[in-house]
Length: 500
Ligand code: MCA
Ligand code: AMP
Image 1 (cartoon, rainbow, N blue to C red):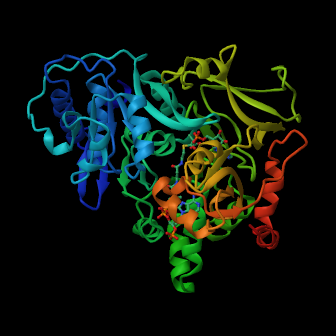
Image 2 (cartoon, rainbow, N blue to C red):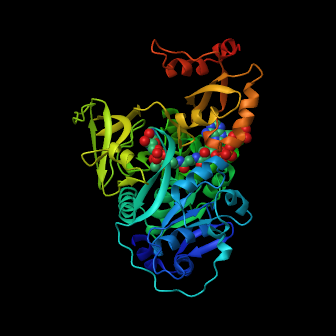
Image 3 (cartoon, rainbow, N blue to C red):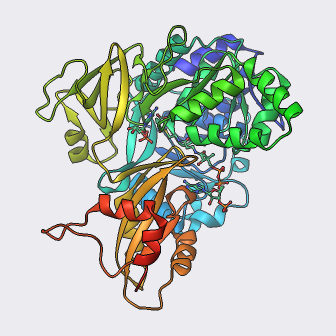
């Protein structure tokens, strides 16, 4: 196993840091090996059993991840604050053998599963290491859930080989070394936080400082300490960092700007980086943000270069080990300057959606994964133009399915029908908006928004609601989402339409 073998070489180097202390590579290995021994108990190998983690980013999270891998299991990280219905759906889909929760959170999962499979890290206490199984590279190591075009999320199966290829590609492209130190402020249930930040740091002998959640002031404080060399985040986070910066006095601004200018690299991805954010970051820090593009199913695909021109509004060139082509609707490769769908091939690309052979089959064309993203290549630089499917929303860097939100809204006893669209927002990228047809005149925007608080995880929650007699429709009765989007974009129209 690539990461674990590498860690052996880094011995007393510091792997992880947090406010609670440090963990060396040796300690990380020892702790994860003893936990792996406990996880396999009387078996010799977990043989692909799914171990769900509901842990927040922490040393325990990483120890568990490495333990599951060494025990031959599949690590399934989920957000710890999932609403009940989402958690129930996922647990049924995953069929885990064990679910690890934070101390004090046992009650969150118990309604959906047997007590015997829910554990906290304190339940493990073996202090000797057994013989751990030898794991073939083509075995799955992770299941990451991503919103699909058809509604419910689906699990992306990532093998050890995929993970290794994704890490090696980024190590080479972005020049990771053991002198690097990064600060992780993203959740650890997405590729961005797990692979690009945590795994790349640990595969390189670098140090990853872990924050359990993003807090702009805490990030600026890290930059001020002067030992962070690279930082990666989604555009929303950079927008929030700059909002914080704008609110402090001139003296403080000078210090913050100087602190960031000492970093060797700042990277943005997971959602489009607007040219205004790119310019403002450059103005403040002197850094041309390196923008890159990727997907849960593929890892990183395209990236602006570490050395050489970083083009504003573009996502650069194919990363090492990744092949990219743009195709038209007939799946014919197209030439430079013509927009087409991005297709990807390479050792980092996943092989299947968990227990969804039809969706897996439909997502590949002759071995190439079809991303659903549109792009154009202009003198060697790829620029993204949007998505083929308008029902996929990216908000705060999270991918969300409009159809999934619509289905939940239709469960509201006073809602007859619901349609979900998104509108542009400078901070969140896109904001989720819901139009609903009520069953009763008593239904109000506020009551819907309040109902949504329990039904959706924060990033899936509609932020604007419009109550309507009917949606704009074409001759066939199909909802015209672009018209609805315009209504949300123009609040004055929104008020005049809110007439039920
Ligand atoms: C939260 N709020 C929102 C949203 N989320 N408002 C509008 N739209 C949203 N999406 C509101 C909350 O209700 C709250 O409002 C206030 O904002 C702060 O909420 P909080 O949860 O505290 O926000 P946060 O902690 O600041 O979170 C923002 C965040 C987070 C840090 C940007 O969303 C995040 O970590 N995003 C990154 C996701 C990620 O890792 N994506 C990578 C996917 P009030 O104050 O009124 O209560 S992997 C991927 O895409 C591929 C592989 C790739 O290319 O990387
Ligand atoms: P996810 O399924 O959460 O992995 O999200 C992957 C999607 O995020 C891609 O298909 C793109 O639509 C989007 N994405 C990732 N990086 C970028 C970027 N730099 N610019 C625009 N969109 C991006």
